[in-house]
Image (cartoon, rainbow, N blue to C red; front, side, top):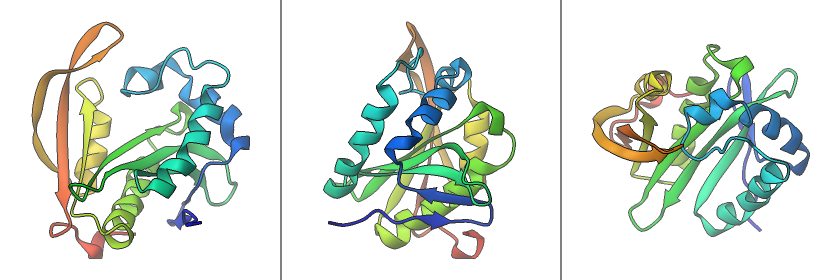
Length: 185
């Protein structure tokens, strides 16, 4: 069995999720503010959803479809969010997705974690391209993508339907040839 690695940055430990993370995931991801700016997080975040989510991750890793990490503070081990790559092996690319719990917004954790994930994607997974999108109402996510070197690729109008409303989606991407190892973790 291929074990998903743990990644470390100066302030963070990106590790596989464990079932005992479920109550914290439900609490953090359950905030309406998180669901409002992400595509796939429901609100309300009901009992059992976090356990189902965590249970799905090992299969995705083993099948090569994804690598999803719990973002935890190195010093305390406190869980602050989630970040992962949804891998499409057919095209040697992955979509970066993430959320940070509301109490931890504005600390730079998403950017720090994303740099480590991009490095992992290019060096370990040998991807050619990594891309991400964000809802138009979440410019902070776009800033994270810019800080890690992703280039703006365009806006898809009314691309996502969330809570009965259509939202524009802004896309950014980075190729392995554009990735600068000097600025990685």
